[in-house]
Length: 319
Picture 1 (tube, rainbow, N blue to C red):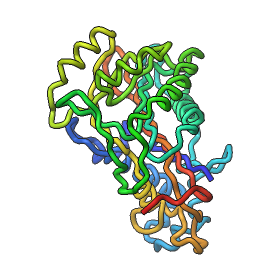
Picture 2: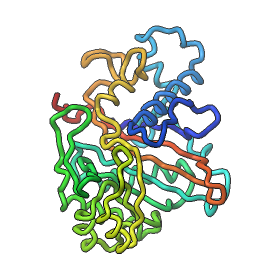
Picture 3: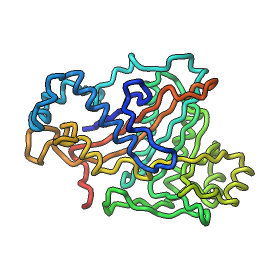
Picture 4: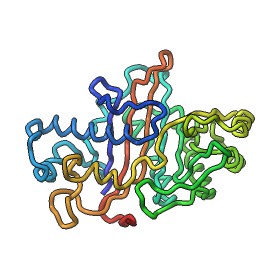
C-alpha cells in the first residue's frame, strides 16, 4: 500500500513555531515536526475527545480511518482536500520552487514515476499548472567545499543499503525525465544539488536543458570554491545554498512517525501479527518540498512537504 504523508502549509498562523530553525541548522527537524504537527491537528479535529485515550485505542484502524483518506490506491495521511487549498493571488505573482529528494536504496527505475507523482501533488496542492524551478537531490552525494569534490555517504538510518553516488548513467536517465516535464511546460527551470564543478562538467554535455541552479550545502559556512564559482559563471548556473539533510526521511524516522505509541500516528501495526494498524515493512520512496514566494514582497506564503512510503510487500531494509 502507498502512504502519502503531507504537512499542509507550514506557514499558516496556526503552524508550530518549533519548526523554524536558523539557516545554519542542518536537519530534517522541520519536516518531521511539521508532519507530526499536521497528523496531531487532523486527529484532534476529527476526534477531539481522544486526547486522553490509550495508545492501543488510538492505534486502531477505526481511529486513523477518521482522519485519513484512501483514494487512487493510496492512503493520504492526513486526508487532503485539494479544492480547499491553493494560492491567494494570481499565479503570475509567485515564484514557486520545488525540491525533490530521491532517497537512498530506492531503484533508479522508479524515479520517472516518482518525479511525476511528486510534481502532480504539488500542482494539486497549490492549484497551479506549472512550477518555476525544480531542484533534484540525488542520494549519496555530499558536496565537499574544501576541494570541490564529492563524497559518497551512507543512509542516516544506519542501514547497509547504499546507492553509488557517482552512478552517472542513472543521473542522465533521470535527467531525461526532468527534461520531458520541462518540455511539457510543467517546469520552467531545472536545478541540481551538491554538484561540484567536475560533476557539472560531466553532466552538461549530455543535457538538452542544462541546470540553471546548483544548490550546495556549505559546511560551517565555508567559502564556495573558486573553481566552482568560475565554472558556474561560465555556464550561467546560479549557485544557491541550503541546509537540508542528505537522507531527509530515513526509514526509522518514518516508522516512528507512523507507528504506535506516544509519538506515533498509529497507522502501522504494533507487531507483524497485530491487528491494530497496517501490517508490513515500510520503505520511504521520496520527499518533495515546495515553496511559493510572493514576488513583489519576497514573502513565503506557502511552504510544505509531501512524502511517499510503501508498506506491505516491499523488501525489509537491512538492519
